[in-house]
Length: 323
Image 1 (cartoon, rainbow, N blue to C red):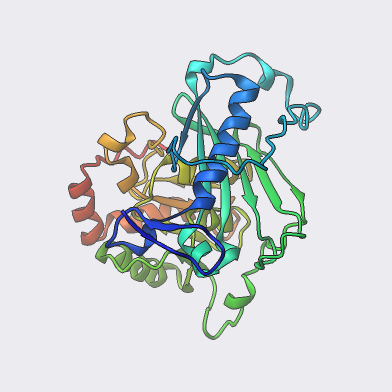
Image 2 (cartoon, rainbow, N blue to C red):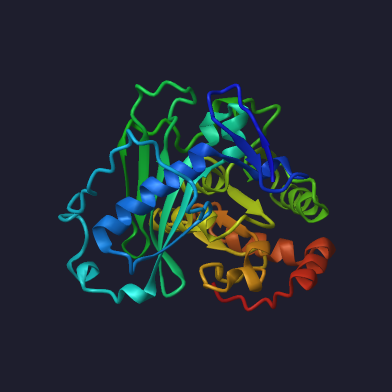
């Protein structure tokens, strides 16, 4: 693991993979995860299963950090009665990504950074909170963060903190209709053959243009908010990237499958031995009259591509068409 200094005031920046600049780890990641994890365990005990991107017990929290008790009654009046029935804690997993978009954080592209806390029950994303620590894209810490939350089964979603400055129109940098005709297809900047093929085929069939987003949660939130028509990725880091944003997307009426049209299966505890993180995802907003079959049509388009078929064989996925 390569370690370097940082001119941004971070005490260290590390590369988990020295050949991949996307694998950046900062002190902010580790310390944030420890704060989140310790807060949750203080409320629900050591038996609560928490899986985070930065599971490193050696990361220390600064001595001045005070962990406040969680406010557990914020949504007491909003959650349906049957949703408060007891759940066997062994069926619950909390997935934490303390800084989704770490590479973007280090590069100063703060608008892409999020804190993701998702809840999965029996391997399905059911609830999530997406924290946006830099809602105006600046490092002005006097601006309160924005939190977007969702409870998937009841399609209950909301926002608190600084009002969300995003919505059903493109981001300012994507509003030039000559450079970025709509609909917008959001992806990362991967140049893998399978992703290049997915971009070309989607634009060929549906028109529009490709817009680049950083951070897995940021991409999926863009779909949930109808900022983009869809988001496509061929792989992710782990379940912590998807649990919270998938729950929020579903709470807002959207849909998400893996790249091959199957149910997202990454919340299995053996996800890393089943290459679930290499199955990617397709995320689409709530269907409209104009795009009533968009998600299914996207899956059909992907499965027709030789590059996707080859990738599917490589990953070892059978298409079940059961999302």
